[in-house]
Length: 109
Image (cartoon, rainbow, N blue to C red; front, side, top):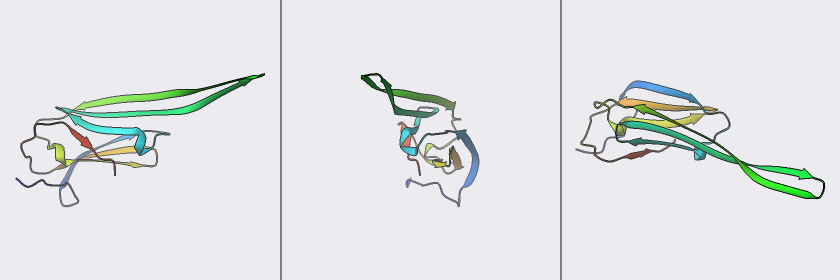
């Protein structure tokens, strides 16, 4: 079966809207692992502490991970993700299901 890409001609089954304040699309990772949709975010920002003659520079890390179980009938190729403002939108479209046996990274648009 030809590799089908989800688009406007396909029916939207549902869309997750996840607030991701302060995260950029480069700091987010959306992927399908087995029957799970896994969403991760990790960012770091420099922290500088200046006291008298000493300067301490370190990095503060902020991360999260959410996972959602996908039904067997959902085609992994029908998942699309995009960031709008401070919200991550993960859309699942109804497209023909092919035999899928591997994990899949979802490209952020």
